[in-house]
Image 1 (cartoon, one colour):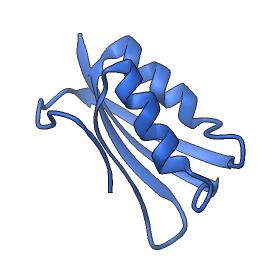
Image 2: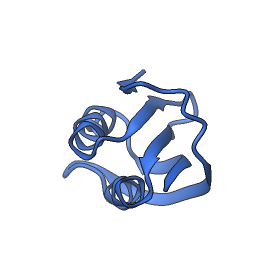
Image 3: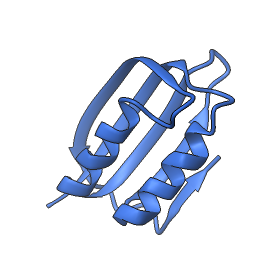
Image 4: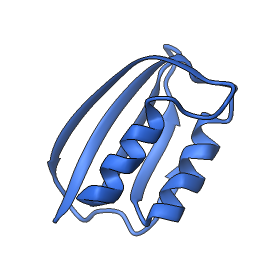
Length: 90
């Protein structure tokens, strides 16, 4: 079953290769969507794909790359909309 996840990640998550490492993980898992930095210092992401792959990527984002320190991760799930054909770091 395909699902969609919307994430807001806070902590030391900008300037630590969070977007790039999430891009690599998403590509390895076959997940589509995007990840971007927000002006308030958080990272926002939308993932779509097979439920197991999306949840694996969400779990990755709970820690992120080695230099990151995630303080909070808000995630909401819903049905996949099928609007992405790849994964992009914006």
